[in-house]
Amino acid sequence: MQIKYRVWDKENKKYIGLYYHGLYVYENGEIYLGNMNVTNRFITEVYVELWDLYEGDIVYGDETDEYGSRLSSWTGLIEYVKDKGRLMIVDDLGNHYEIDDFEFEKCIGNIKENPGMFMVIN
Image (cartoon, rainbow, N blue to C red; front, side, top):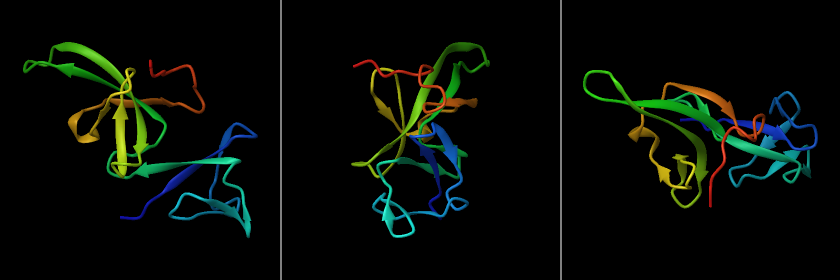
Protein backbone atom coordinates (compact mmCIF):
# COMPACT_ATOMS: atom_id res chain seq x y z
CA MET A 1 0.00 0.00 0.00
CA GLN A 2 1.33 3.43 -0.93
CA ILE A 3 1.62 5.97 1.88
CA LYS A 4 -0.04 9.27 1.06
CA TYR A 5 0.27 12.61 2.84
CA ARG A 6 -1.42 15.95 3.05
CA VAL A 7 0.64 18.97 4.05
CA TRP A 8 -0.27 21.86 6.39
CA ASP A 9 1.55 25.12 5.67
CA LYS A 10 2.19 26.67 9.11
CA GLU A 11 3.00 30.12 7.68
CA ASN A 12 -0.12 30.46 5.51
CA LYS A 13 -2.35 28.32 7.79
CA LYS A 14 -3.80 26.16 5.02
CA TYR A 15 -3.42 22.79 3.34
CA ILE A 16 -1.37 22.74 0.17
CA GLY A 17 -0.94 20.30 -2.67
CA LEU A 18 2.14 18.23 -2.00
CA TYR A 19 3.16 17.62 -5.59
CA TYR A 20 1.71 20.81 -7.05
CA HIS A 21 4.13 22.86 -4.95
CA GLY A 22 7.10 20.61 -5.71
CA LEU A 23 7.46 19.26 -2.18
CA TYR A 24 8.88 15.82 -1.51
CA VAL A 25 8.37 13.89 1.74
CA TYR A 26 11.02 11.34 2.65
CA GLU A 27 10.22 8.22 4.71
CA ASN A 28 11.88 9.82 7.75
CA GLY A 29 9.30 12.62 7.58
CA GLU A 30 11.63 15.35 6.30
CA ILE A 31 10.17 17.65 3.65
CA TYR A 32 12.22 19.14 0.83
CA LEU A 33 11.54 21.79 -1.77
CA GLY A 34 14.20 21.07 -4.39
CA ASN A 35 17.33 20.53 -2.29
CA MET A 36 16.21 22.80 0.58
CA ASN A 37 14.94 21.19 3.80
CA VAL A 38 11.66 22.95 4.68
CA THR A 39 10.50 20.51 7.35
CA ASN A 40 10.01 23.23 10.00
CA ARG A 41 7.55 25.17 7.83
CA PHE A 42 5.22 22.27 7.05
CA ILE A 43 3.44 19.48 8.90
CA THR A 44 2.81 16.21 7.09
CA GLU A 45 -0.26 14.15 7.89
CA VAL A 46 -0.43 10.47 6.96
CA TYR A 47 -3.43 9.13 5.00
CA VAL A 48 -5.32 5.91 5.73
CA GLU A 49 -6.85 4.69 2.49
CA LEU A 50 -9.11 2.07 4.06
CA TRP A 51 -10.99 4.67 6.11
CA ASP A 52 -10.34 7.70 3.90
CA LEU A 53 -8.81 9.60 6.83
CA TYR A 54 -5.74 11.72 7.42
CA GLU A 55 -3.79 12.27 10.60
CA GLY A 56 -5.36 15.26 12.35
CA ASP A 57 -8.94 14.45 11.28
CA ILE A 58 -11.63 14.59 13.95
CA VAL A 59 -14.14 11.75 13.76
CA TYR A 60 -17.56 11.28 15.32
CA GLY A 61 -19.49 8.13 16.09
CA ASP A 62 -22.33 6.65 18.09
CA GLU A 63 -22.31 3.57 20.27
CA THR A 64 -25.58 1.67 19.84
CA ASP A 65 -27.20 -1.36 21.40
CA GLU A 66 -28.35 -4.46 19.50
CA TYR A 67 -31.61 -2.71 18.57
CA GLY A 68 -29.89 0.35 17.11
CA SER A 69 -30.72 2.67 20.00
CA ARG A 70 -27.97 5.19 20.72
CA LEU A 71 -26.20 4.60 24.02
CA SER A 72 -23.59 7.34 23.70
CA SER A 73 -21.67 9.40 21.18
CA TRP A 74 -17.98 10.15 20.99
CA THR A 75 -15.40 12.19 19.12
CA GLY A 76 -11.77 11.30 18.55
CA LEU A 77 -8.66 12.61 16.87
CA ILE A 78 -6.74 10.56 14.29
CA GLU A 79 -3.10 10.60 15.39
CA TYR A 80 0.05 8.87 14.16
CA VAL A 81 1.64 7.01 17.09
CA LYS A 82 5.33 6.54 16.28
CA ASP A 83 6.07 3.74 18.76
CA LYS A 84 3.13 1.74 17.36
CA GLY A 85 3.92 2.71 13.75
CA ARG A 86 0.31 3.40 12.80
CA LEU A 87 -2.60 5.79 13.00
CA MET A 88 -4.83 5.47 16.05
CA ILE A 89 -7.81 7.29 17.57
CA VAL A 90 -7.05 9.41 20.64
CA ASP A 91 -9.84 10.48 22.99
CA ASP A 92 -10.06 13.71 24.99
CA LEU A 93 -8.20 12.06 27.90
CA GLY A 94 -5.23 11.10 25.71
CA ASN A 95 -6.06 7.37 25.52
CA HIS A 96 -5.18 5.67 22.22
CA TYR A 97 -7.43 3.11 20.52
CA GLU A 98 -7.13 1.01 17.39
CA ILE A 99 -9.14 2.48 14.53
CA ASP A 100 -10.62 -0.97 13.85
CA ASP A 101 -12.20 -0.98 17.33
CA PHE A 102 -14.62 1.83 16.45
CA GLU A 103 -17.32 2.44 13.90
CA PHE A 104 -17.37 6.12 13.21
CA GLU A 105 -20.05 7.91 11.28
CA LYS A 106 -18.09 10.70 9.69
CA CYS A 107 -15.14 13.02 9.74
CA ILE A 108 -16.35 16.32 11.25
CA GLY A 109 -13.23 18.41 10.65
CA ASN A 110 -9.53 18.50 11.29
CA ILE A 111 -7.43 19.90 14.08
CA LYS A 112 -5.48 22.36 11.90
CA GLU A 113 -8.44 24.17 10.36
CA ASN A 114 -10.60 23.83 13.51
CA PRO A 115 -8.16 23.93 16.47
CA GLY A 116 -10.90 24.45 19.09
CA MET A 117 -13.04 21.54 17.93
CA PHE A 118 -11.09 18.90 19.87
CA MET A 119 -8.80 19.14 22.89
CA VAL A 120 -6.94 16.48 24.81
CA ILE A 121 -7.19 17.06 28.56
CA ASN A 122 -3.94 16.30 30.35
